[in-house]
Amino acid sequence: MSFLKKYAASFLMLALFLTIGIVLWRTLDNLFYLFNFGYIGCSIAFGLALYEKKFVHARRVVQLLVGLYMLVYLGLICNENMQIEGFWYYLFSGVFEAATIHYAVAKILGPLIFGRGWCGYACWTAMILDLLPYKRGPRERKKWGFLRYIIFGISLAFVLLLFLLDVRHKDQIMFWSFLVGNLLYYGVGIALAFAWKDNRAFCKYLCPVTVFLKPASYFSLLRVKVDASKCISCGGCKRVCPMNVDVTDSSRKRKNGTECILCMECAEACRKKAIHF
Image (cartoon, rainbow, N blue to C red; front, side, top):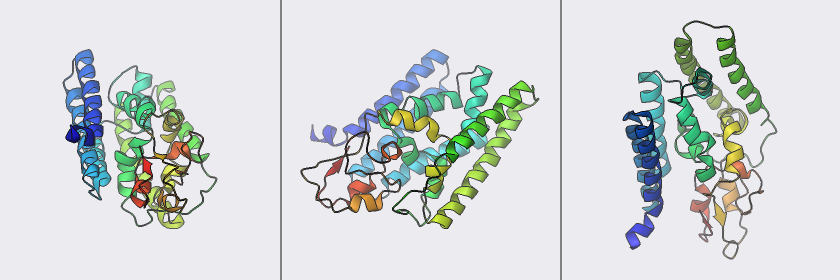
């Protein structure tokens, strides 16, 4: 029983993704979805198990397993645009597969359960940015968050125009936009990280996907909380948080609360073990 309790989060996450995979497999009559969500579920469950074993790079392992799968296999090999442009493309095409399913599970409905966990454990952009040296970032955030909404609007307008103008070879355009978009994201993200000494600057100010993630994350079931009876207000958790979240406040209205990526850096830094899910 102690084993099951210790790894309960791993088993629950695996069960959740396997359930999604089975439902989609049977509904859409495509075995690929069982493989897809089964693989992602196994990767996340494995990472959570490593975290329970106190392996310092547990989250990075999940990032690489899921991020590289999404980027290399789905994106480059299967020619699926898994960026936000791909979501708009399949949505306007009336096709519920690939990016539309991915966004529904990971970025629209999923955050009601695991918040911004996608950003901490699966994003292939953050997978690279988290390897840069500025893991803690500045104490105060810049007021540039409005830029994400502009980029969100540009991505929507870009795909909408392809349909309104009835542009030919839209599938090829989507593949090339995936390649160019990723190069831009990596280039701008790395440049901002070094300019502002903040690995997650791109995530905080420019990433358009957060427009989907933030609203649902407010109601997330899985949240980082602090045990006030143990907290000594040392400020260690705030200093290490890459997203500038006030984790000492357990309320949903805490500062930058919808920015939490569940990286658990705060829990690792807490000397009193006051922080938990």
